[in-house]
Image (cartoon, rainbow, N blue to C red; front, side):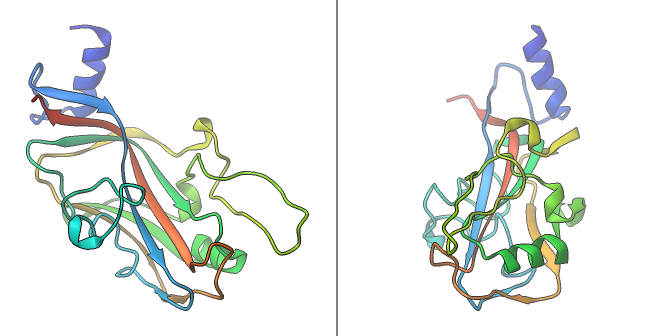
Length: 200
C-alpha cells in the first residue's frame, strides 16, 4: 500500500472503506441557510444538511447534499476540517450577535461531536478587502486563507447511512435591516475532507 493509500484508510478507520471498491476524493460537503431580514434565527431555522434535495429548491451553489441528514449508500465521509461562513453582506450588528450569542453544533446521530462559538470555525474563505465608501462593508469569519480554516486534530467519520446535522444554538435572534445583498443572513456550514463513493 502506498503512503497515500494508507493515509486514506487511516482517515476513515472504519469498515465502510474497502480498498479498490471505493472512489475517494478530497471534496467538501456543504449546506447553506438563507434568512430574510426580520427573520428569527433559532436552532430550527439554522438547521444544516436538513432542508436539501429537489424539494428545497437549493442550487449546487447552496448545497451539494441530495438527501436530508445522510449520504446515499454506500457513501461515507472523513471530516478533516469544519468551516462556518457568514455571507459577506451581513449587517455588523447581526454578525456580532451570531458570533457572540450562539454556538455552532455538529451532530453524528443524536450525539454532539463538535460544539463551539461560531468564530472558532474560521471559514478560511470569503470576500476580503476594505472600502472607504461609508455605506458599504463586508465581513467574514476569519481570514480567507487555507492556513486560517478550522482543522480537526482527529478526523470524524460519517459512516454509511449515519444521520448527521448541524445548527446554531442560542436565544432566538431577530435579524435587523436588510444587508447590502438583500438578505438578513446567509449562513454556510462546510465539512472539508475525504468523500468515499462506490466505484462505478
